[in-house]
Length: 133
Ligand SMILES: [Zn+2]
Image 1 (cartoon, rainbow, N blue to C red):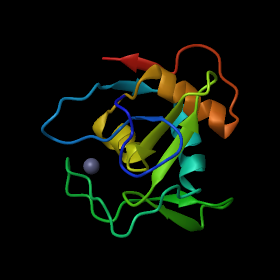
Image 2: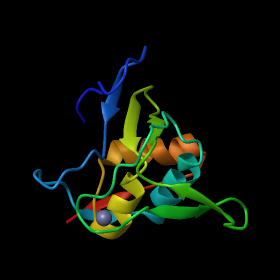
Image 3: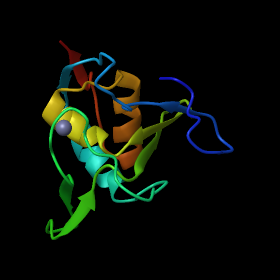
């Protein structure tokens, strides 16, 4: 939840999900609606970068998730960002690799980020979206 400084942007954003093996991260259970929201939003390929950032926690190579109505397309993780906006207007920037971190490495992003993600994707929610372990 540090201030986003990766590139020049005219809006302040908070960082979420930029994980590295040298730093402990919060683990827990993340509601499926959050994962669904992030998958939908990852199709936008915000701030696409040249090259790939691989997962530093496992040997997974060229990570992708199915996309499109029938899952016929692929969204490549590790080369773009997902940006979401909370109800209070707070903007968050995360690597799209966050989906892999959640599903494969039990990463549990901050509740406010998860809420912002489902809100940005237009998914209705009530109750908490994360359970910290
Ligand atoms: Zn991994």
